Length: 197
Image (cartoon, rainbow, N blue to C red; front, side, top):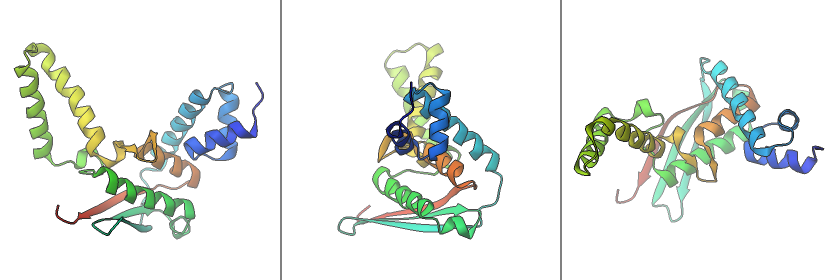
């Protein structure tokens, strides 16, 4: 099958990968869009893991104020160089993360950052639910494990589905940006303020 510029553009729009990377992924997967997306995500993850140990002492603080000023977010996104900190794509990512935090209200950036007492409380709630519904003791732990995975995917920023594209998590978005810009990028901290909350 012949690779068209329309196919390359569609893949680029879905993954934020470079044009040549998209074309190469389509070639390697015989123009299968889903396989090409998976291939680019794997490559992005590999690049991100390779760069993960590098210091991110530069960066950008993005803000998002929703509607009538009753909800606001500040997020610090770090990178390695001032050059990338001034990059439009990097800043757009930071603003998207601020909007994500406003919309999805995560409790923490990563699952290891979620307060231990909150994790334990959720685990106990799921245990009680499983036992009260009459589930056998030997499968209760499997039920709890599955429910905890869902819990973390909802309350941790990196595992949440991106509000602008439900096919991508924030981690996927970050991996794509790391692969594209060639630097380690980290979401360092955020603050979400809401009137009356």
